[in-house]
Length: 367
Ligand code: ATP
Image 1: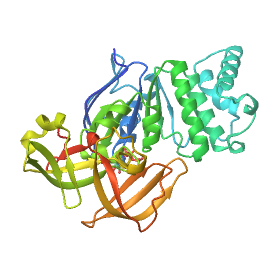
Image 2 (image 1 turned 90 degrees about the vertical axis):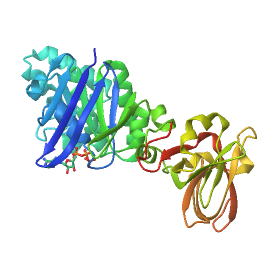
Image 3 (image 1 turned 180 degrees about the vertical axis):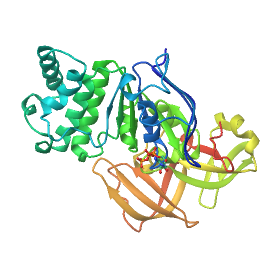
Image 4 (image 1 turned 90 degrees about the horizontal axis):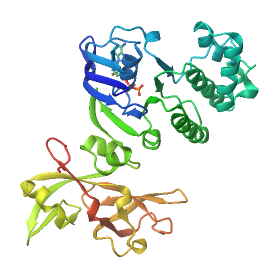
């Protein structure tokens, strides 16, 4: 049985539709991440599931219980917010013990559970402190710890790492993933950060303007985005897009634009047949554009000419930005040994086996 089900859920604020007709089944023990740009409806979705807001239409189930009218406290969920919502006047211990006291547990039992959870999250030495005496990372761990103690059927997390610096965030990502494995519970997690989504989610649900765009594993979303929005949202630097036409010359299909002429792999010709002579959008990920000197010879490529306008060296890789002949620019992630420099006229190599083509009108992937 799915752990959480949204059936045609819509949320309106007056005339404004924050969430439109959402249908999702979240499996038991799944780690589902809602991701999307600011205002896309992520927090709204989580608030509806938490019972902090009510749906305008549709139904929400937790397990086999319809929870539309159920109060938040009766939904068997625990929530970790971006702000952590710790009680400032209480110690870490009391913040953690509070919900257990409300449940009517005995003192000894509470003490044992708090100690065990604190140990799990490395907080044993901080139990006597107040929230203001903790670092951001420690506060975040207390909030997670408090959620663990409620032992809910579903954990809800809304941007719990957004207040942490880059290094702590990496550590906290690993901690939350570990907890998910250990607790064997369902996690529903909201973030605008695609790295969090890609690294933590067993599946990712991408929202845009209140509409679910795609839900799938991180790998499937990266390699087969359903539309141009998803393709551009997942991946950093973002996928490059080129407007052009699909043409057939001597039994070979080509994508042609002012800057590019790319032969399409013979294996894809059936899928693209009906787009011959039509305008299409070609998407190329920066990591599929190479400095040919460092490319295994087995990869089939086509040339891409341009002038380098900017380079960013990260140590393990180099991102170069090119101005193409038609005034368009594009990003390429090239080998770290590459010595391409600002102002160079270059010919890079596009891997033609991993192109993404989209319908120019609907922006849906052509498959
Ligand atoms: P962010 O990443 O910026 O937090 P989000 O994806 O979580 O964004 P939501 O908070 O779900 O976005 O908001 C979705 C849309 O609904 C936004 O356009 C927001 O302005 C609107 N909205 C949210 N709450 C209300 C409200 N109480 N009244 C009116 N509009 C609202």
